[in-house]
View 1: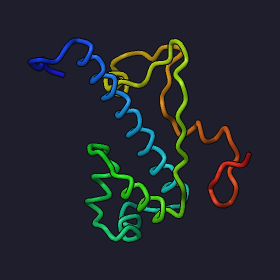
View 2 (view 1 turned 30 degrees about the vertical axis):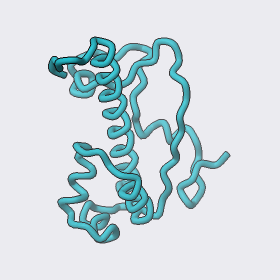
View 3 (view 1 turned 180 degrees about the vertical axis):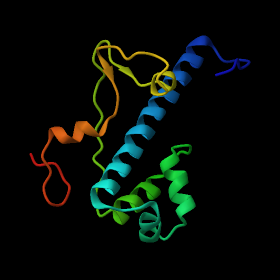
View 4 (view 1 turned 90 degrees about the vertical axis):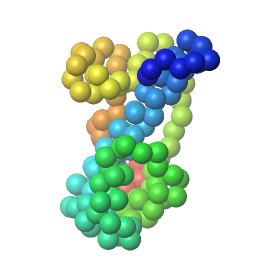
Length: 134
């Protein structure tokens, strides 16, 4: 992030943290969508047809370069016959999120590194509707 007039170092740091959190959310979201598409044998064209949008729009969504609306997320859920599970929890001391450099393989992850792999969902069994069993 470049220097901005009238923005304190604390505000810049907070903005950087927000950007990194958003990057992590986008990564997690696109991983989830891609995983369920692969699990069900769906192509981007199939998803586009189900959503009533162009394949190019699906590519934009899965490319992660935009801020998706809740309506778009709901349309994805309906088209995939699935549901997004949303959780918010406190960070533990030492937790870090994947940053752009680490995602590109430019930095080695730390032992307490938190990324957003699909494997997290393999920790809980899923019922036939794709929802975690409790």
